[in-house]
Structure formats: structure tokens, C-alpha cells
Image 1: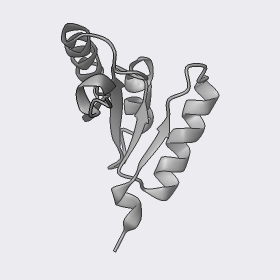
Image 2: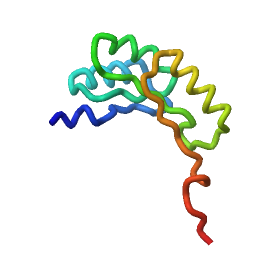
Image 3: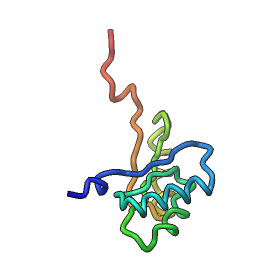
Image 4: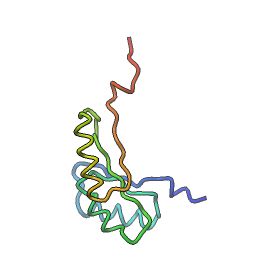
Amino acid sequence: MEFNKYFDHTFLKAFATEKDIDTLCQQARELNTASVCVNEEWVAYCKELLKDTNVMVCSVVGFPLGQCGLNTKAYETKEALKDGADEIDSVSYTHLTLPTIA
């Protein structure tokens, strides 16, 4: 069983550099992970770096807090898909998902 195909290799820090993303994609190639998960600004770059592999490109919307509105998440999703994302991870707004504590 190839456990590596169940994992996303992720770099979501706001200060990511091209070198960081190059390293991320190289490691994903070597490990043959399911995907790399990056902020939307890096989707097209990762797609190019990984074009000859079966490693997918994932992007996040509403990251990191999930507190943007649905229209913002929809826009972020459209942009990521336009840039080549194969998968979208959406961050939920916590007050909608956590039980209220009285």
C-alpha cells in the first residue's frame, strides 16, 4: 500500500519564496505524494513544476481563519481553478462549525 498517495505536501506560510515552493514540489515528486497544497498565488507555478508527474496541485480558500464571506471564497476558488488547481480545500468559519458553549 502506498501511504504517500494519501497525503498532501503542504506549504501555506504567507512568506513563501520561490525557493520554498521549488523545494516543496521537488519533495512531492520524490515522495510521490497525492498533491502539494499551496496558497493560490503559487498554483500556476506548481502546476508547471509538476506537469510531468501525477502529483496534483491543491489550493486553499478562506485561509487561514475562514472568516471571509461565501462570495470571497467563490472568487478565490474560481481563480485557483483558472490557474490549474486540481483540488480546493476550504476553511470553515469556526462559529458555524463549533458548538456553542453556554
